[in-house]
Image (cartoon, rainbow, N blue to C red; front, side, top):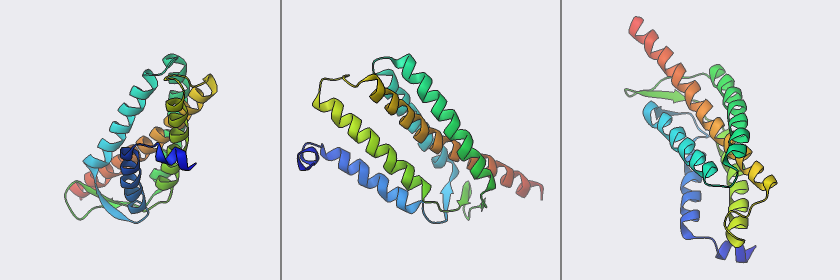
Length: 168
């Protein structure tokens, strides 16, 4: 395990700890800029699709990715519709409840991605088995679907709250 950690590039640790910081911040109720909240899942989505298309069997992986993305996005979208949110104190912000699920999804995805990425780096590039590629596609689809569905759900709630404020 120590050899694995020693062979890990520094940028992986930097990205991990910065993301971990934001996941811990997500545990508490806070105001979030709605445009930034939408932008992050778009970045995750593009990186995830880029990753899928640069592995062998991109069409097969895309089917698994899309299926898990839709399932995850629909489930979390349903939960966000029940969340108690309000307009934030600043313009274009929304006050969202804290949740531990952001941290849990990130840690699960990071563990899977780190293990498979390390396995691939230690062997030949694109040497993952079909089962490993399937796990990678499903894990990626689930996590991106989670963040996308959450952002979309809160964005729609923001639009409803903003429309109510303008009317009333």
